[in-house]
Length: 220
Image (cartoon, rainbow, N blue to C red):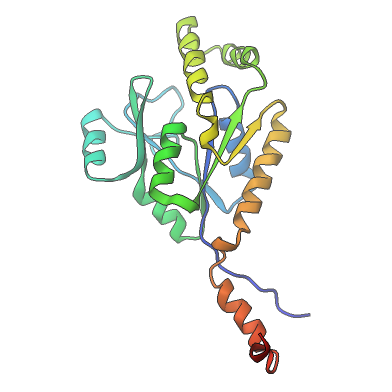
């Protein structure tokens, strides 16, 4: 049996966005548990840690002045204001992950997705997850029992704004059943990994195949 052929590929910058409560965090966790070739980009934020959150694991928690300086120094791939706080994607850790052959998963909103695409173009794959109904979205938010009515109302208003940007994404999915939606997300990831433009060395490999047949290149 011939040895298997493995071509290196360029990493995928995989953006998963959704309104709060539509399922992106659950699906992200499922992806990371199932696939060792993708790693989560940990965002920096100026908001205070919530109970149980660990600095460097869930977020990089920084003060506002530090965040502003990082932004001024070009240390973010993208950043935005969300609910009165700043969130941003540090550039260096993402580049380090790509250098090790990992794909990188981004849990960011439409503003961040747009900025990231402007920075990295065709390496970015953007997936937006919709709730089946707004009533179901509100039910999911209330079932968390972590937010006041005022906060939930603000999240619902923001959700409507975020959903209005659905057409800025490459793929749009409806999360009616989380297992099914997760399967669709993984199918997208597998297909994107196989795209021709991401296969490093494919041109040379194909040419070598042709040259391995005597005089074949002369007939082409």
